[in-house]
Image (tube, rainbow, N blue to C red; front, side, top):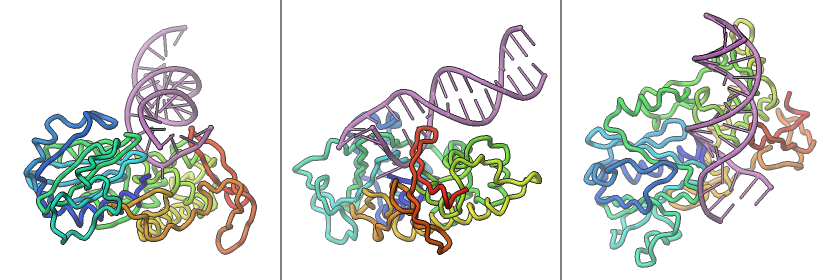
Length: 310
DNA sequence: CAAAGTTCCTGCGAGC
DNA sequence: TGCTCGCAGGAACTTT
């Protein structure tokens, strides 16, 4: 589900519901997700008030009032939803339309793995049928920063970012790609090079920039280490694609839902992703019409137009 | 069958 | 020659 725009959308929803609220109970409904839950999670978090909900790459970062930091990664299919708890007041602005989880008498679904209950009566449920997601807990901010050490720079400046997150520049991107023998698509998926991109937005950005996913990354950099015009176009396309998706509520995924359980506001379609055989919409206002092709790189589907992307 | 993500393992080439 | 290191590619994890 989640690349940067989807995680940012979830972050905003959780921020509105969680900041200033106190966690009154934690229920772990199994012992692990991708990794075991941190030892003592429930005891360590119970009674803590949420100070801030931030993001770094595809990770949600929850700063607690005692300095501890809760971190959540959604993996492929993870989802946080907010529900009115049992007997909660009617003041809460967000809740799940499908009241499965907060219909307490009916119990939880089989993939509802972690439940946080808050002092205003709302309940947050982490659901993840594939369990590629995970949750961990740090004693303090230094430990968080150590864990984030190898995460690359952020492509979008925004207030929801963890403080001190490095920002991506086209010059910095050039330096990171210069040594890379790998195809540009693989390089952009590498979270150490750019934070937050995933398979969908990489395909879309490459198409918008007119860059072939197979092109070797280092060919986008001049001998001097400066970015080529192609790389400048690609950098701009990455930023543009992500900005649009954030603005539309991270809605581009077929089954993406925000914390209120609703689809994004603008389920706009992709230009190439998951559009094998459909006509390429072209770029720069020039129609194309050639069928979008699908092929596999590093075990993942790539969608591209052989005419528009070089 | 394929899936939005990450981690781990293996193999290869470079360099000492 | 042989070892180590780093990079690149692929498999694995899981459920629908």
